[in-house]
Length: 440
Image (cartoon, rainbow, N blue to C red; front, side, top):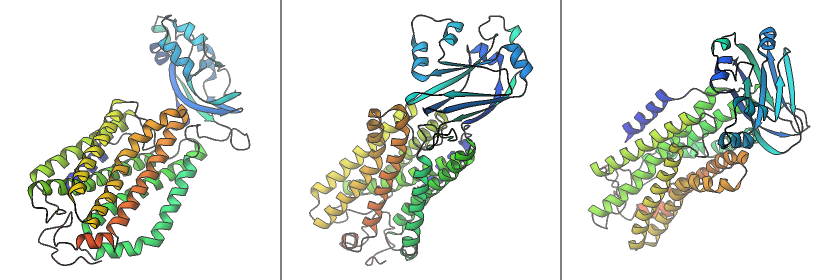
């Protein structure tokens, strides 16, 4: 299984997608691209407040004036209605229905988007006099380099905030999260390191759990660095955003490895061996094969989802097929592991062992089900709030799950007594390696 985890991480490194641009956009206005798609899609942004701003800078004014270059802004709902309409609007009719239009005949243009009752997504398109023509030869003219800055009003009402309505608050959240990780590390790092150094039957569990925790902390730090830079220039550090997602995927793989190893080990051993050794981890071809299949399936789905949605949030609303399959996989894992633990709990006579299994089941189910449940709950929120609800909620729930597991496996009362009921009965241990009373 160690080689499996390394392979999954290596695949993640090799296939990692490039970071997407922020809300300071740079590129070229192309007549050819605009003609091919009845308007060149430049980007989208969730404006809010009364003084949101769109600022565009171009250099080649003569070309822009000659092509009658314009920007068209559509509210997302209105644009969707146009796309789904059965009226069959022509190219020029679609462009005429834009809520805002900007003619580019100066070096710098500022367009104020005001009186927005609630945060809304706006799509920005470029078009010129060649866009709705059938003759493509006339559209082979010089492209126009541009820089576009999309801004929302800050707390004082000035348009200086690079964050869209759906991203507001994430910078502060990741700052607090990094601060909490730092404080916890200062308090518990030394005692945890001593527990790991001492070895013992829980050595592998603590190593895998700590590795997953460090990856989560690394993801939070990378996100904070990205958003800190993003708040200043609207671009951020795309590499750090991608690194945060990589750390998050690696952490998910680590935790899946740990939970599958423990649960399947207990279940398979109980099916094949006597009740006197119920907790023993036994690496059989069946358990290894199942674990390999599930871990690789989740790895492929996570990578697929990242290619579909390159926004640096680590968690997504699951509008694509990969996201839906991930939701289904997590629900199936929670149900299967929950059923296996329930069967063990119902036949277990020892109160201590039963309490141990119940607590572990809570940590397992919380880890796997928090994402599907939050994705369903997010439906009741506005579109711009859904990603934030999922991102913040999943991070907090999985942090609580890790705390539950740490308390369980570091407990000097419950787990100590459970592990001492019989020798070599701990999960993830080498059967011949720990035949004495466990020690910390």
